[in-house]
Length: 269
Image 1 (cartoon, rainbow, N blue to C red):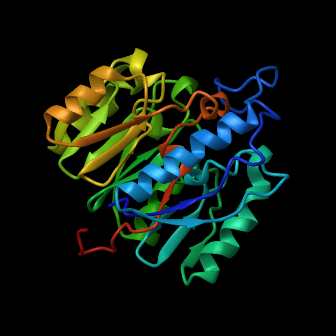
Image 2 (cartoon, rainbow, N blue to C red):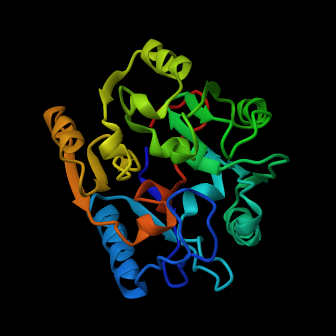
């Protein structure tokens, strides 16, 4: 679980457009600071024992640092993301990278935010629709990746991707922001069975839930002390990092890493 990750870099990261509520073309990230933030995230992954694969960003793709939207991967299959038009130039780079490494790549016929809206939790796939993912993608994901898909809806564009509202800490621990999910989706999560950690809207809006966990170590943004304490209380090691520049693009730590090691059906990592 999250022991093998694909990252890009922040060399060309900038805000050329506004496709989520956190982006403002008048508020540009500091390039050197963004590079340092991303390098610190990668270093934390390596320190935690995770394998990190790298795809250089392209000059015409200012959001390519957010590799999580590229696809969702299970076993040797990958369903590509179908992002907003402003990010479509990224897709061929990720398609080629995945195909060159032996993944069977499936295109998305409808809008799909990749792993941003599709969080693996054992043999379940928590999959959001209604913001940046078309509901017609859910049966395709179930069929192509052999997941039991759990449909969820976030509570408005502030939570434009599911990974801002829900975090898979382990197959037995989920963290979520109740205010970020519609009431029916809150009930769905509560019925699933894992230990649920509630996160305030204040911390969630700082990208607290946009974290990477391998079930032992959690790498998360700084500025969410209540969530960090709750995870430590459950015996997890927690590493907190600054992401203020990356946040200007509407992303955090989870956004910058595409998981490559989700095991195929019938196997648990």
